[in-house]
Length: 88
Image 1 (spheres, rainbow, N blue to C red):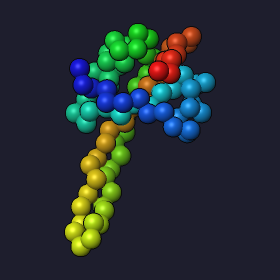
Image 2 (cartoon, helix red, strand yellow; image 1 turned 45 degrees about the horizontal axis):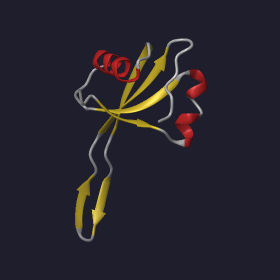
Image 3 (cartoon, rainbow, N blue to C red; image 1 turned 45 degrees about the vertical axis):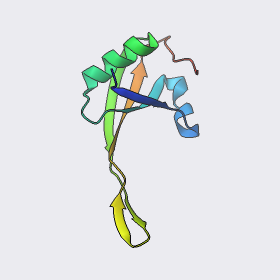
Image 4 (tube, helix red, strand yellow; image 1 turned 135 degrees about the vertical axis):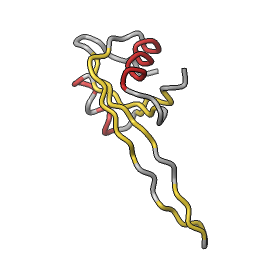
């Protein structure tokens, strides 16, 4: 199951932990149901809601060549009351 790539822990995302919201980087082709099942299986918690969005890649220039960073899909997962993911 490589649906969940990483749990994103930044200063901004830790502010949302009291509301039981966590940010994950996920595979671009995954859907909300697959993300919910993967989080419940990996972290042994109950998921209430999943919201997804795609961050578009940026244009970058290296010397005289133009390039583009890849698009990434992220998911904001809200856990049920009393659930939380422990920091590893």
